[in-house]
Length: 103
Image (cartoon, rainbow, N blue to C red; front, side, top):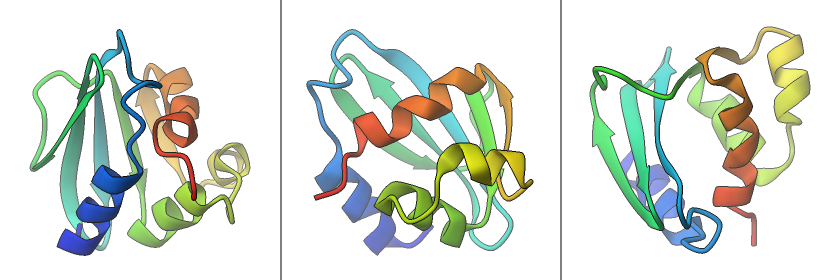
């Protein structure tokens, strides 16, 4: 994941939406390696690598993530068409657009 993408995530993060949330979102990018987001009661940390016990794991291309985050790609349709694979608490994936609202 590029520094620009990480910066964008941190700028778009909505601490109020994450109030009381304690979750780890693991991302596996075919084209950008593994990264995970730790959302902890209104705070966000982005780390490279793999978390030992993520709440949900999402596999996709970084392009698909950008599309989902921008609203150009519907997350549920990406999941249904195989562009996005999720394991663990997959309902958490639906929270991403609330945590990172588009501007």
